[in-house]
Image (cartoon, rainbow, N blue to C red; front, side, top):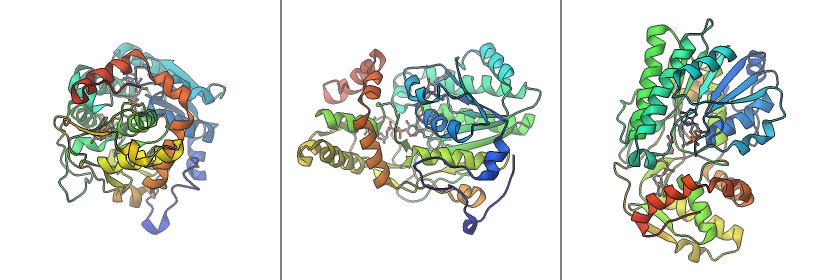
Length: 385
Ligand code: NAD
Ligand code: TDX
């Protein structure tokens, strides 16, 4: 893997606009003939990663390992089915031997590890799966990776939530102490520690990236932004936790994809890189913007759509604010985000309104049961799809 430290004045990332991933030529060259294992590629970020990367790198082989949990949406990847450099294997990382077998057979040069249980509210309601997949599953994958004759670069896709909550000032940097608040973030923190330990103890070549909140196409509609878009479209209540004053630092998902390639190809072994959009917003402001965008697109009265907002009992242990200082990935890897929160939200609203078949396929029994369980107590009615 080529390594070059670029300065702020020497930004080479991304190439072109955010509409499509375009990797620098030297990176494409270095990836020719390589084999890339992607775990969790049928989920939100993994699917965006594959949809952007597989066509961009026709001489690189990608294999998607995914258990296809409730959060997966295999149809998202239909455009890749005919491409010779893409393959899929259904497997559960909780199964150690099966994981080992697949890794040994594919013998990847690079592993992008996205697979995880990812929804904070579900982790509060039922934490066991989070420990099993995020901690044990990561352990199984690490063991499989270090068992290979030629050890791969292990890129662990993690979250800013491992750092806990910020007050009104300051930013998360790579050296911020870990202080997770939810079973989800604690399980991700544990997995980060394991990856770091494998780098130090076994010399595994690793990257850890801790990214802020993503949004964009293909996000399962249990997360804030797609849930609000669809409820606003359908005239259902919009449940905002607490007073809606919690702040998240939003990043359009394809900017995360380009950041992952930047950290992999320009970053250094054993290092951690924070990724963020420098786009902080309070939840209530996001929800109001969504109301206005949906109202405009569906020719509804904006005031009527906004009147659907309900302040509901807060999430336990709800982190007040996340905000990323992305200086390290910017200066070392030459990456910066390209989508603003305004244009990214517009694109996202348009995408959800135009992809009803995709949305309907998410409305399975597991999802309906979750909406019922999470929102019944909060607003007295299931905010169902
Ligand atoms: P997601 O829930 O949409 O998708 C997760 C995928 O992992 C699904 O396809 C699921 O089937 C698969 N999976 C779950 N358990 C598995 C198992 N035991 N074995 C194999 N596959 C399994 O998640 P996402 O939002 O795409 O997040 C991807 C990664 O990025 C996660 O590791 C998450 O912690 C991290 N992350 C997410 C965000 C965000 O805002 N969504 C931000 C920062 C980091
Ligand atoms: O109905 C809701 N009402 C509400 O006010 C939901 C679902 C969420 N919220 C709030 C809680 C958060 O402050 O909106 C904010 C965003 O919530 P989520 O979409 O659940 O995301 P978050 O908890 O911030 O975690 C997300 O970003 C970091 C991803 O789910 C994680 O996987 C990622 O690591």
